[in-house]
Image 1: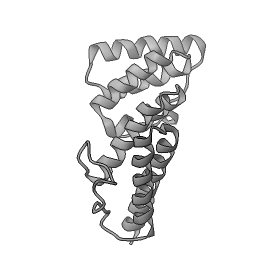
Image 2 (image 1 turned 45 degrees about the horizontal axis):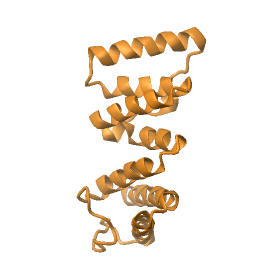
Image 3 (image 1 turned 90 degrees about the horizontal axis):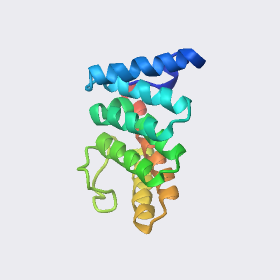
Image 4 (image 1 turned 180 degrees about the horizontal axis):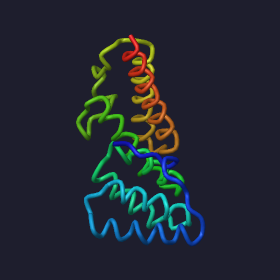
Length: 163
């Protein structure tokens, strides 16, 4: 299941405090609920409790990476934790392409999506550039390249599913 920040109505003032309190109770009662952790993180983020929001969203991602990866990468980037955000984008790309956790595109040039197309070549180019920038210590450019690679994967997957 995938949750998005805009899928939940956003309460105001006292309602927000009550919602945070209710979600905090929910995660204590059910520490395996990725959705509760994610919603709690979103609400904490709304009121500027960034460290607490990151912790809650990290807990959600540890329980359900697919459902929380984008929110986690976003909140990390917003809080200038670029290397950590980049690691989430890398993990997402590796998950999409079936790579092993420490495998990169430069070391494994044979990794390709099933259809060989312009998008697949672009995906590989962006992913290899991301790995190169990361090794050079340029996390900002690496993060941008990982985002581009995931976008290429998504477009290639959409094209494949429509054919």
